[in-house]
Amino acid sequence: MAKKSPAAPVNSKGQAPINIGISDKDRAAIAQGLSKLLADTYTLYLTTHNFHWNVTGPMFNSLHAMFMTQYTELWNAVDPIAERIRSLGHAAPGSYAQFAALSSLKDAPTTPPKALDMVRVLVEGHEGVARTARSLFPLVEKASDEPSADLLTQRLTVHEQAAWMLRSLLEDR
Ligand SMILES: [Fe+2]
View (tube, rainbow, N blue to C red):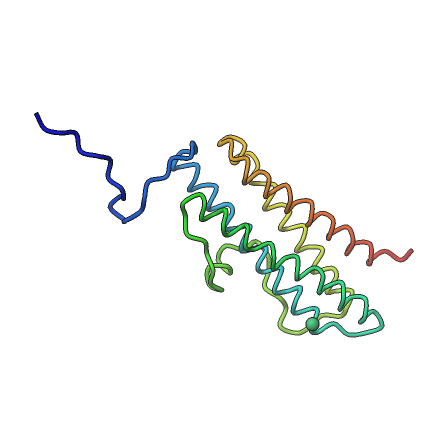
């Protein structure tokens, strides 16, 4: 009688199997959604750093400092998003071509806008990332993917708070 062969350690692509209780299809769909969130976050990071460099006018000091706080937070956020994609068994996008294709946000303007127009661009950016993060909840909840839901919740808190702070700068009293 032939002996039962042990489970293959890797598949035809040389990958070890993943069995964390989320179907292959759901892991792929969530990884794709998180890739869009990564692209949005990276795009907003770069725009915010750009505005830190190029802001001018009477609000220079406060905006230069505020943008630094925000781009530092965004820079730190891309790593856990990318590593969640890896934990789901997929490759994390990490090129400008991939980010441009995946992002829902416009690239930073070539000519630096006036200070308050920078603030408007960043409000729209944070709101856009929040919409991308929020749109993923039905999928992650269906798959009981709590780590992704937790990550999305944290990102939403940050983006909605940043949008409020920036929006407040646009009010005249
Ligand atoms: Fe700086």
